[in-house]
Length: 120
Image (cartoon, rainbow, N blue to C red):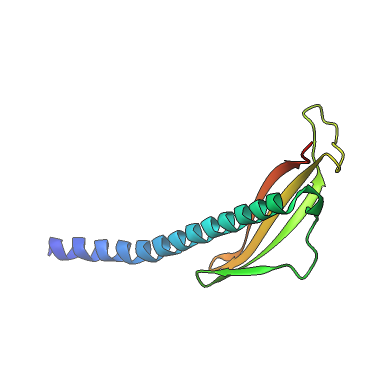
């Protein structure tokens, strides 16, 4: 009888844990894909040259990875020196790659940032 009770309690716990684990693993995979997509965009910006780094305009591009659709955009702002002064956009740009997607738990966003400098 005691074994039946222990088995029942254990099965109830496992029934609740397994779906949560699967959802958590899928969310981690989606975040990793968003980070990979952002890194890919940074590499493309580096290849294309400093002068071609501009903010995205709608409609934003999309990419599909592992049955999830990701929308990404590039945001550009002035980079800030450690003294607090803003740098000219002709010298350096603060670039954000923002990736959005819909998961089982709702809308998600991943944002990666880098300062890109003009080569002298």
